[in-house]
Structures are given as structure tokens and as C-alpha cells.
Image (cartoon, rainbow, N blue to C red; front, side, top):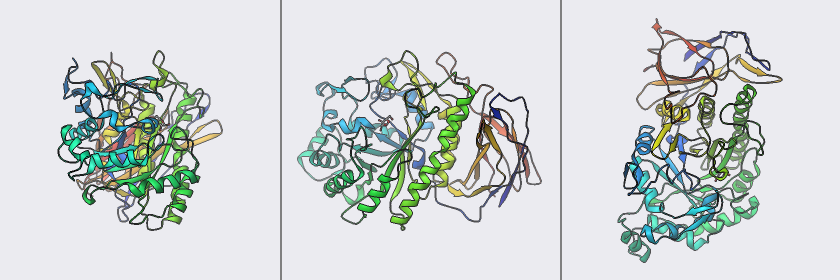
Length: 518
Ligand code: AHR
């Protein structure tokens, strides 16, 4: 059991509407005696959709591009994603998935049909990136694969054929076609979803109607035993619980009816208003607070859905996957509104840290999440401008948490949690999550949510306290193509004397520390 004692340094030059937490003595106990679930590495999963410049330019530039590439995949992005140890990729959507016909994306590229991406900007989709390209990319990254099937405009036959094309090794016409297209052995499909946001862009369905369709489609989705994906049902969004309720009432997983997880979506919008969401940069201080406040709401939504599953599925066979989450702002000025391109600041990294802490807490059910989206779309890891590339603060937040992939959760309890107040509202000023990593070391992730005021944490019984710190003087600090290194993590190390370390967690910061083998 380790003890962290945070004490607030309050510099009281505050902005008008916010009040710092009062000095508080808070104990943080890391209960190493009662480890929790393994934090599935796929909690740190990514989402890539045919949307804007997310795939085309962001990942795929084609073999003949002047941008250095390997078989059409741009090398700079590939290298950066390798360093991020991306565990899982979800593709092809999103809303795009329910209008995607997989046959458009196989065969010689110059013969693939040209279609319109009616969800995202109405642009021409030349289908250069399809099934083979997706799996090749995942294999280059060493990532697991999550394919989202088309329920909205497809048919059971189309979906069944796609799964067979990808997974089968039988000498069928479909498999011969795959081989002719250059792939001898089956692709490894780790996860397969039946539809996306079926309550909305996926077909405006009711949970009841969807549950019946799910049962129909899943009855025919077969794959070899050693290449059987986990099947995911499309669930609700935000505060909705009716999808989890209906799906877990009506679908009881058995050998003939597989449902390994229900998905859920939650986006963080600073204003909580889809019409004017707020800006990614140059936002007022109130929107720093409101964005963090909005993001923290996901915990209640997860809790409510997990409570339903705990009742209907006490053996915990069904996971609760948050397969879309992240910040969603007004698009950057001058960009195509259908491309969902936004800058990414220190605030996004803090939000990533807070979400990661929440997902870790519910890791028994939340075995996968996919931040939306990996490159050039919404809360991206990477932004590109033709041949240029920058890494975002969110990229660094994910990189700092690599030791948490497949680590064992260690419960953290905080008493007297300091509060960060704005007007009548308040949020915790400090958030923490700890885990014992595969390397045997214990790691702690700390977030100071306040715009002003470091929090001093005293940590007992540690071997070391070394790691990385991500912060800045500016709340909207971000990297640009002209200045790509405005914000990146710096090394942090606290002295340890008689097993005790004093850590000053700066305002608006994220810190991940290796506490050693304890
Ligand atoms: O991530 C962008 C979109 O958000 C996805 O296509 C859709 O599933 C959600 O509404």
C-alpha cells in the first residue's frame, strides 16, 4: 500500500469565474494488495474512418506519391504510430461503415469504382484504400483489427461474404478471389461489429428492431475457430442506457448467438451544444473548465450501463466497448466542414488522461476503447499538411500511457479530493490511476485539472519516481507545422529519500511516473 499526500500550492491570482481548491490534505492509497482487472491494451485503441484526410493523405498516399511511403502508406505517420504501439485499429467507420460495400475496395486499384462519401463532405471516394490495405497497414503496425460491418445498406449475404473473404481458408471461389488479389493466407479479424450508431446514421433504428436484426445477421456470420472475431453490437450514446438494456435483455450469448460486447459512443463538446461546440484553440478559460466537466460525465454513463450488464450478465461475458470517444470542436476555420479537422492542444491531452483514468477504473467491462480519430480527424494523434506531419499533445498523452497497456489495475483511493471550482460547478482538481505493468514496475498517472496552482504530492514507500510531464504555460498550447515542438513531454524525476518522494504536479498537467518494483 503506497500513500500519496497531495498538498495544494495555491497561488490565488485567479481568473474571475474560477476558484482554486483550498489547501487540502489528501491521502491517495495505491492498494497493491488488491489488484483489479488487466487493463486490456485495446483500451488504448484507435479509430480510422473514411472521413476527410483521415485515411487519404493521413495514412494512404499511394505508391507513386512524392511523400516517402512504404507500399503507399506514408512513412512518417507509420513510424510515429509504431512508436505509439497502437494496439488496435477500427475501420472503415463510423457512419461510413453503413454505406460501405466491401467489394468496391478490392481488386486492381485502377478498376475500383468511384463512389461518393455522402456522410463526409460528399467527396469522391476512389476506394484505393480497402480491405487488403487495411490489413496490410494493421500488420505493419502489429495492431489487432476491428472491422465494422455494414448493416444499414448491406445485406446478410454481403456481410457473410466479407467475413468469409477475410477469414476463410477453404478452397472457395471467394477465397480464390482473395488469393488472386494478392493475399494467400486469411486476414486476422479480431473484432467485427454489426452496424454503427444504428440509432442514427446507421439506420434510425429502435433498440428492439436492431436487436432482432443483430440476431438475424449474427446467425450467419461464421469463421474458422482459430480466426473467430469477437462480435460487437452497436449500442447507445451519451446518457442512453436503453440500448444496453434491450440488447442484454434480448440477446443472451450462447454457442449459436454470439455477442461479445456492446459498443457505446461519447463525445466531449465544451459547450454541450452541437450547433456551436466551441473552438479547439483560443477558447475562453470557462471552456477549459466546461470541456473537462463534460468529459468527466462519461463516468456516470459507463457506470449506469455497466450496472445493467452486471444484472443481466453476471458472468461478465459481454464487454462494454467505448469504440468512439474524444473531443469534438467547431472545425478549424477555412477547412471543409465535412472533414472534422481540428487542432489539438494541452486541453486535449488532459482530457485524454482523464478518460484513460475512467476507462481503467471500469476495465472489467471496458476492454476496448477507440479514440476518434487517429489522424487529421477530431481528437487526432497526428496532423498532416501534405508532406508535413506534427504530433499532437494527445499523441504524447497516449505515448506516456504505453506502460498501462496490459498492466494490472491497482485501485487508487483519494480522500478529501481537492475541488477545482468554476461558478457553482466543481470538478476534482486531481485525478490518478495506477497499475502494475508487464515490466514489473508500478506506474502512476496524475492529472492536475486546474489552470492555476501546482499540487504537491508526497509519495511514500517508493523506489523511484521518474517519468514524464506534459504541461505548458498556455492552456491552448499546440504544435503547428511551422512550430512542431511547441509542446512535448519533458523528463521528470523526484528525489527519493527513505522511500519518500515529493512531487509537484503543476497546474494543467499530465504526469506518468515509474515508481519502480515495489
Ligand atoms: O467520428 C465521427 C462520427 O461520429 C462517426 O462516423 C460516427 O459514428 C459518429 O457520429
